[in-house]
Length: 309
Image (cartoon, rainbow, N blue to C red; front, top):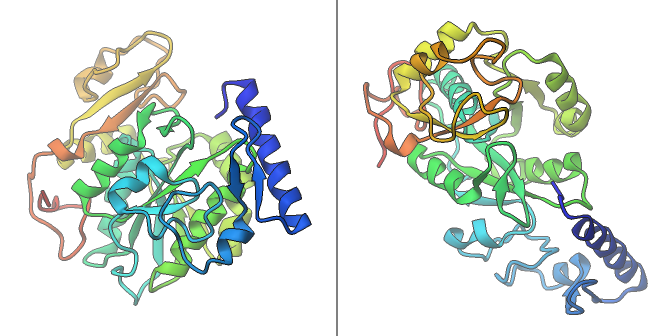
């Protein structure tokens, strides 16, 4: 998350200076790189409302920052698209950890099939607070916002910084959903397919935060055959293109489909599960092959939902 050792050291110093200022009762501290004064979270909380400036330690989840500007400005978890209060109140909320790739799309489709005509799905995306880039996919958070708009699903953005542990920051984002939605978070979902070490990592890093909400971890695609996943991706009518790769077996811009898989060299996982490649689901370009299932907006199930553009 932090490639520059100087940036990592500065972020650690930020945490130390912030905590020292709070302990001393000071409303500000000096940024270690710029020397500018920065308000502490305690000082900002005393204002009783968000000022809309995108403050580093905003305790109000940037509520007053215009939605269209939040992707570029937020420093703490905040709603980037859609509405949480309009979710259905009579069933638990599923929060899907959304990377923007094919596996995320397939997981969303599986969940929407289960939900039927209920609006119960929230997307949650983590990204680097400095570069505004989503890890692994190597796409900007703006692209994720465009996906959420096209799918008509609420999106919570979770900016990551070196001095705050991943699990802590994700807990902040989940609690934002828990406070704002009309029903409690029931499951925190992933697009994990079959890698046991990834599932173990999630259990270690975010399991405690999930259980603290009274929710469970859930992977709707776990151990699903690749053939059935490919059929469902084709049924979605959504082009998925390689947006990042390692090893040179594929090229950025390649279209992921059955032909793509058939041309992969031996040893390359058909879905790139070993990190060989990552994709971006171009949901804004999907073909509306079938109609919506009741009121389930988003990537839908079978049949395919209507195009919301």
